[in-house]
Image (cartoon, rainbow, N blue to C red; front, side, top):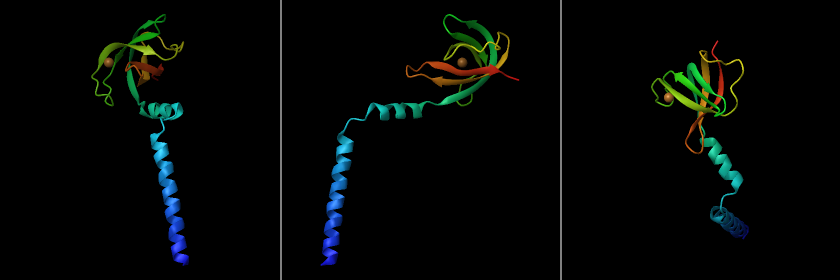
Length: 117
Ligand SMILES: [Cu+2]
């Protein structure tokens, strides 16, 4: 009798768990969950190059960057948006180390830039 009671309790518990799981799947994900997923997809890449020009108003820098293996990019000269203002000590002609990430609109932005020492 004890065994029957136990398995019945177990079945009820399992049914309840299944119902809860079903409800969770049917519910639309909360905005918080969506944000976490997006954040975990952002990958940072590291690059090196020379600062060629600065457009302060547009918040952009032109870099002659070395190849970036993590992106499969060859060396080239291009403009990048800056996430934050350029640090004062970084000047045109400086060798720099920078970090890049892709924004939600698929554009590349520099999240960190510093003089290479
Ligand atoms: Cu490039």
